[in-house]
Every structure is written in C-alpha cells, then in structure tokens.
Image 1 (spheres, rainbow, N blue to C red):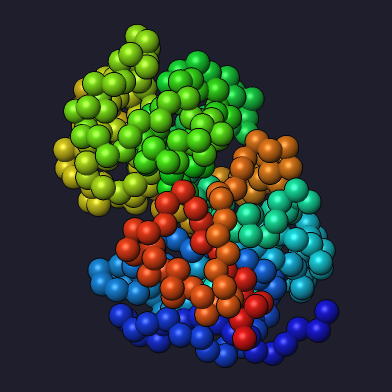
Image 2: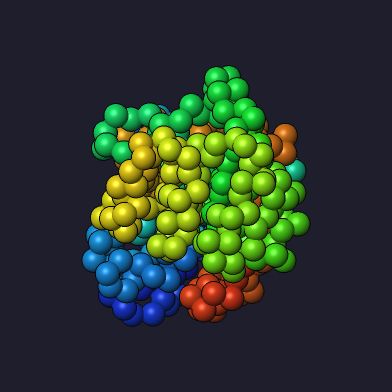
Length: 361
C-alpha cells in the first residue's frame, strides 16, 4: 500500500492543555521495528491523568504528548532486520508514550518482537483492549529479572508447564475484577489452576467475571470488614496465599494485605513502595508485596515481554484469554476526549473504550 507522509494524531501540546488533533509526520521504522497502520486504539485511565501534575512530571519526557498504549493494526513497512513479520500482517501490540510509538494516531513504530498476530476469531477492536493490562499483570506476577528488587512476585509463568501446576487448587483473590487489569488477572489465575477464584466488583459485572473464571463475586461496595468476613466460608479452610489488587485505592490495597494468610504474596499494579501506604508496603507476618512498571520495553522487562507476546496469539485463538467487552467511540480520534471525560467521571464499568484512528475526518 502507499504510505502517506503525514497522519492525524491526537496530542497535548503542553502540560494541562487539552488533547487536539494535529497533522504529524508518519515515522520510518528502524532496523528491528515495523510501521503499523493503527485500526484500533483502546483508552486507559492514565491517558486522561498523564497530562496533569503530578503524573505529567513523572511520566512525560517530551511535549507534545501523544497518548495511547493499546493498539492493533496492519503492518505496512518492515525494518531491514525484521524476519518474523510480513507486510499485511494483523498484529496487536503495546504502544509507548512517544511521538512515534503511541497508539492514538494513525501510524506508529513498534518493535517487531513485541507483537502478536491477531487470529481470525478476534477483531482489531477486541485485540486492542489487552496489551497494557496484560503486560502489566504478567510483569507484576511473572517477571524473573533480579533487579529492581520486588518488581514482580516472580511466580512461575503460566506459559511454562510448572506454572500450570504449581498453584493448582490454591485460592486467588482478585480485588477490582471488572477493571481491565482485574479481568486479565482473573484469567491468568484460571490458567494457573487457582481455585476458588474470588473477586470484588459491582454486582452487575458478576456474569462477565464468572465467564472469565471467577467462582465467587463479592460486592465491591461492602466495607473491608464485611468482605474479609465472607472469605473463610468460601476458602473452606484453605489459606489464601495469593491476592492481586487491580486498583490503586488504599482501602483495596489494605483489603488484599489483610486477606492474605501469613507468608502470602500480594501483587499490585503500582511501580514502587512509595506509591502505596507504608502499612501495606511493610505488611508483616512474612507477607511479601510485588510492584510493577507496566512496560515490556525496559532492559529488565523485555525478556518477559517477548515471551508473553510469543504466546498471546495462541491464547486468543484457543479462547484461553478473552478480550474486554468493547464500546467503539464515534468519529475516530475525535471521539477520544469524550471517552476520556467519561472515564474521569467513573462512568465506564467493565467495558473498554476503543477508537478507530483511520475513521478520523
């Protein structure tokens, strides 16, 4: 296909300024990269928060800032050293917050080894719901890199035979199950053989989460004391050695800490102990806490990221991993600001908002 020289891109020109659509150059892939025509980009809460302090000062390294880390599309150009993909391949990938790598635009550069082929039973929109949540969850649980300390629980990965048997029959507690991170965590727990798989969510999301593998759904509106009181009957005498907190709220983190048996492991989706209450970071009773920086492009995360994307296509094709439910926003990139406003107002639940950049007028 003919590749244009410019594209439509959603960007914020400076800190705290609103996202606007602008014309930007279409980048050229490096030797180990591919150029992707983006057919679907999914939104995450960080996309609205990142352009405002304090997140802007912590996470943004260049302005203008282009949002989007969830993408799916078609390979339209190959770097000189790429051999695992062909032009025309339909792929899913995790973007990055740079002018050439973010997903809320019509074209992006992606490392070829951090992609997966989209099978025929999955749409672009469905595939785009997964990369950030899946990468974050997998790195929080399975990244084996020895440094930095505590960055991951270093559990046995579900793609290894031992990881499919080591935790079989043991309980898992997923707090915040309806969030994208929670939906993926439930499915990873199912793949690892955990049972029962207990989660918290609004009651209207219970059927969705049960279809993903949750055996028990507790009302997230209940106070922590009531949730903790409900656990013993469900656990049936089994110790709870694993909990995953898919949200960053202090009460949710304390619920995970308190639910664990002595010596248990608590997975979080936060990058460092400084981002959570001190009483959770140092929980006592031999309990340990794992952290995560949800990017597969770092020196200490790339190996795990490559392994993850190597297995992703097969999981999707076999139905072992299901995407989030999708709501497609109208008008391509022009519909994203309205979607982000809904997310900021907590008006999105159990569903992933997805835009089609190629439909931008």
